[in-house]
Image (cartoon, rainbow, N blue to C red; front, side, top):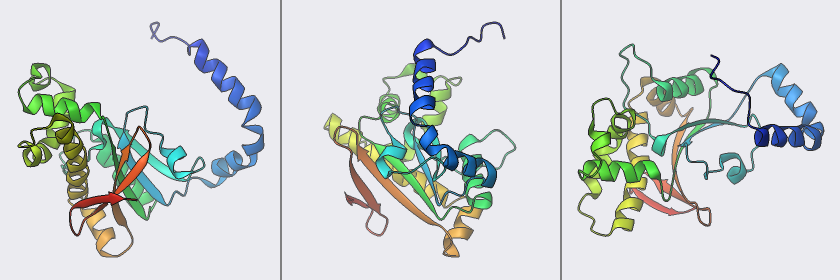
Length: 216
């Protein structure tokens, strides 16, 4: 563990600034969260991309959103095989224990994970094809979506289309989780798809009835 170092100076400086300037006015709120626990109404499954500012977009305070991030905001199929499943575990915790009322799958423009999937599926990313590639095996989740956009010629259009197909794939996979389907069928949980343009932060919402995105 001697290779684990202390925080970089710039992060320590940011923390100290926050603790001195912003934290005091929110002290009671943080104490409330510590004493009463978290009770978020919604879970957001978003991309790891640092440009996607979840809490800022929705104006939520700490403790109001249960956020899970992974590469390309994917939800893999339900596979109760005894192995490690971080995204599935987060969904299970949100639905069974936090009793969230909504799950939002949020994709975004210029997604590096989606670009990687396109490169892999088109045979231009040998490193992702390797069996030991963690990224490649994760992006396999998105292959069904790629099959639906493979014939699009324009590079940018294909990228955007697959970003949105990825949201659809994840929503489909969510309904394969028995506890998710049970909560949805009981009217206790609703699923939502969102796509954000990171340049201007315009949002589009997915309408599952017509498999179409429209401005929020």
